Image 1 (cartoon, rainbow, N blue to C red):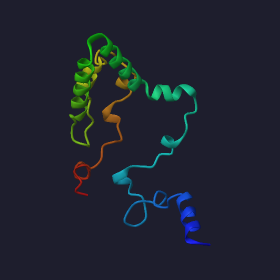
Image 2 (tube, rainbow, N blue to C red):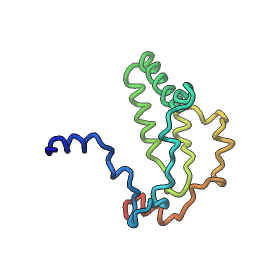
Image 3 (tube, rainbow, N blue to C red):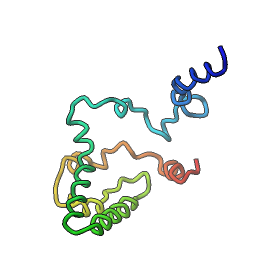
Length: 141
């Protein structure tokens, strides 16, 4: 077999680095990267599942296009700039943020939804060791 045939076989194969666990001892570091989830890699089981997953994005696009048709190009650009600024404001990594500014910009601060009632931060499993999480966020680990 020549080297060209071997190269084409290697390009068609699955990269082994993606399948190997990350970590110093060959085990996935669950503390830093979290648990692996197969759920994110599955295809949607119902045709409406993909639509529901992208509902907020689709609604924002529709609102921006309506705003552009009514008020001109400056209005959606200004609103997108405010959205981006509101998304950047966060608490420390180990504390949940309510994203009140983002909810106010979207107009969802006056409505009570499923996530408002059943998304209690005191029942969250996100809380970890604060020093470790801040050091990881800053890139010190």
